[in-house]
Amino acid sequence: MSGSSGDGGIPSVNRPNQNENCEGLVINTNLASPQAEVINALNPGDLLEITIASDQGPIQAINQAGILAGNIISREQVKLLNCIISGTVYEAEVLSINDGQCNIQIRSI
Amino acid sequence: MNYQLRFEELDVIEETPLLERINKQISTIPRPTMDFMPGIKWGNYGELFTPAYWKVQYLMYSENEKFDINYRLGDNILEEVVACLLGGFGLKSEIGLAAFQRLKTRRQIKEAITHEEILTSLKEPFVNNEKSVHYRFPNQKAKYITEFLNRNDLKLIPLDNDIELRDWLLSINGIGPKTAAWVTRNYLNSENVAIIDIHIYRACLIMGLYSKYYDIQKDYVKLEKIFLQFCCELDVQPSKMDALIWLQMKEANRNVLKLINDKN
Image (cartoon, rainbow over all chains, first blue to last red; front, side, top):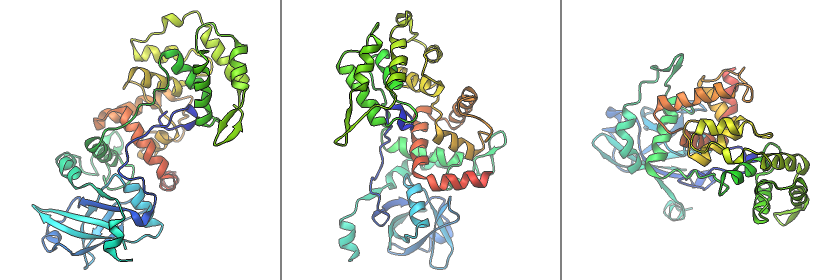
C-alpha cells in the first residue's frame, strides 16, 4: 500500500537518482528565490558555499562574502540535507546567469 | 581524484528544465506566514514537510516524470481482497505476495473454497532469498479468506461507487479502514479515500493537521477527511501525494523523529 510493507505492495515513485552515496550526489538546478544584488555580481565558474539554516532546511547557497545568493529546492532535498548533516560538504559552481536566474551545479567537495 | 575524471563517472541529476517549467507555479505559493488552513501556515517551501514544501515537491515530481503508483495485485476484486488479507502487520510483504501467488496459481481464489484447501496451501513452506520460510499466521488468515470467499453476497459487491465499496470491504473480517481504503484506491482508482499509514500520519502531525491524541485506527475517518482536505487545499491528487509523502518520510526518518519531538 502506500507504504506499509506488510500490506503486500510497495509503491514506487520514479526517483531521479538511486545512488545512495552522498559524494556521488550531483545536481544541476537553478537557485530558488535568487537574490538579485548577489546574483548580478556572480560569474560562471564562481563557487558558492552550500549550507543549511537548520536540520530541516532551507538549504542555502551563499557567496564568498557569506551573503545569501538563493535557496536550493530539489526532489533530492531530503537526501541532500541528510548528507550535509552527516558531514558531506557541498559547493555550487555557477554555470550561467540569465534573466535573473542563476544556474548552478551542486557537488561534494 | 581529478574532478573531471570523477564527474565523468557520476550521474548528474538535471533539474534545471524542470524548475524552469514550474517556476511560475512556485511563485504563486503564498508567503510562509500566510494561513494555509485554520491555524496552519504555509511555511517555507525550502523547509522539510511544510505545506509549501509538499506542494513544491509534488510539482517537481508530477511535472518531470510520471508517478508510478500501480499497486493493484489481483485481476478481480476477490483476488485483490485476498491479496490484502494475506498481508498485514507482522508479515513480510514478500511472503504475503508469495502466498497470494500460490493461491492464485492453484485457482483457489474462488467462491465456496474450503478452509482445508486454503490452509494446506498456506502451511506449505515458501522460498524467500533461497531460504525456506513459513507463512506466519496460516490458521487465522485461512479463516478470514474462507469466510470471505464463502459469503453469499459476493455477486453484490458495489464496484461502481468507491465509498460504498470501501464501506462494504469494512464488513470483511480481517480488513480494517486502511486496507479497505487501499483496495478501493487500487481497484477503482479512487481519489475519495486516503491510505493513512504511519508515514502519512507523521507528516500530518508535523504540519499540525493532526493532533498527537488522534489514533490511526479509532479516528481513521476523521484523519482521512483531514488528509483529503489538505490535498484539496494544495490542489493535488491524494493518490500521488500519499505516495510521495510515504517515500520521503521513510527516507527522512531521522528528520521526522526530530520534528515530531520538537513539536511535542
